[in-house]
Length: 592
Image (cartoon, rainbow, N blue to C red; front, side):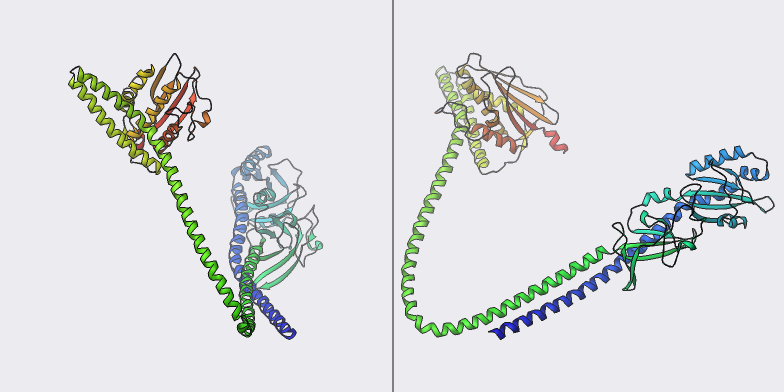
């Protein structure tokens, strides 16, 4: 047994070592592949950063050339223009162009005119001025003590009428103003000059740091007059997949590991360099290696479990074969016991099925009771109207008014057909089904409801008030179902005023543009709990009343919702309750 455990441990260690080696290989491959993608983006970012600085400084270069050809500048060098007038022109140009200063310099390097009131400066030794005196456009940079900032100087020669150089115009640009727009952007970008000193960067901690091989003694004092040049941050270079990979120890704002790119910018005399963080590449490679390791470990675990299971089953099989004969009698006894248990379970299952059938039947009876309550509530009003029309028809027949009796019989037939449609609508409502909506005349619906409820209102001594509104738009609804809702609201209003003196029900319609509103107001005691009026089986009527089941408003709410409308109930400020239905006008539905 001990030997077997040692063998298993050795196999597991070898497998884990193989997984580690394979995962490392996957990590290396994934990291190198991700570096290719980062390198492509890094080169684009490097070119973009170089072009960005060059284009920002290009306007200063062009402005120096433009001002050098200005007649007033030439006039000043010839002596035909005053310094004060030239200063005003230079100041106006510098302000509009966003330059730090514009200076007109004599061939001896003396400042003749300038846009800013600053102490005079000797330009004779400046590299840009010397080049301008040779007839070319000069450019230089410095940390100026005079201006207290980093500057770029662009010197353009001023040519005389016969060709000789009369002087130079120096355009001075504030580097920090150009640099501020992209400080903190990614990737890390810095520009080094010919002395190996970082002069421009989007990371302030890199400014005035000298690359390896450059000491502070080698940097000209006139270029960096007011600052001390410090060594570059610590870093380790590594050649990885043909790329220059740096390990940087430069603080939280510099990447700890980055791809290094560089490009020469001869137009401004700087070299642009970029450090592209490789953290995304490491994360992607780690994820690929982790997935590979997880899959290998899962496969190894399954293989190990399968081997162990097979070995365990083999041992159990040998043990079982030895115990078969000894357990035969016990199994026979157990078999008999199982037969008895099976018989008991079959009987219990039969009893369970019988109880389930009884529960289903009870559920059917409960649902039938709820449907019966809803149907009786919805059909009670038409039945009352049929009875009223039948009694009136009998009276008219006794009086010999056959034509009027025939009209009542026709109304009874119409009410019977409406009852059939009500039953179909209630069945569809109970099954959560919607019949197709049509354009319904609201005035016709209210008129039909008044015909049905008239006998009950007269019996209860209730006055019904309604005035048909001409030009009222039709609404999208089901005609019979809308009659059910309006009739239920009027009937509830009549019931709410039982036992009161002033019994009035007012029905009003209103054109709201996109919607049409129908309001039913009574002069009863109002609503005690407005938030519960649309709950099923909630009723304010007396217990045992014929109409007090509490389903009417709940059904009405569902019907109005099926039309895409809204219904609400509230207490009127002058007393009584008001129920309002809002439905979509037909023409709004067509336009939509």
